Length: 316
Image (tube, helix red, strand yellow):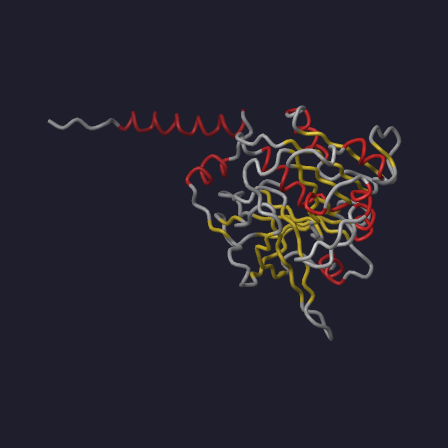
């Protein structure tokens, strides 16, 4: 005689599984996309070899501040991930009348393996509009369901575990984006021992302030952050004005420290005073500015010239 499980036992097991899922979603705050999709590894990298332009659809526009908007683009399928490594960028391309194609680089800052199950995966661009910027002006003029071409990845500085003992990240404006890539990568790995000092400056607000504060509280011995606002609100407790030589001297390690790396990213004027101008994608140029005056060497400094903010995320 063959014994078969009863239908009741089947439903009891199914109920238990659903209850376990509901517990993770509502009690622990873990979305179904993380619990099922990522665990099974059913992912499809979107950007692999930097050869093919891929057209993505704009699905949401949100005002951020007086000259920035958030643009959400859907990746191709519910199992799509970016396929990028830290630190790397994507290129965007638009065709405008009576001029060559406009191509700009954008930096992803969220998990490269993020994907969705119930909803299509998407990524978000936080873009500042420049009066003479053809790409930023074009994107600010886009409407829902318009499409934009992307290609990548474009590697900038590929990180490996415990690559440096101490990393210093100096960011101006949306130059925070590659820095956030490094921060997320380093503190997302339990085997990492690297210490991080972040100095980030902006005009009126700090990008990723909540995330940085959470990390500062969780890793007080490994993560030091300095906020600088040019036009701070009333009651601001961080530094005011611009990043200057005295501020850097206060918060940076001694130039003779062992195995340190300083990354700099921001607008042209920011590079000029901090580290000198980068000559091209392959030539860092001679070290100048405050970092040279403080005694650092060219080998200790890496400039990351990446234009804007590109955020891959689920659940926005």
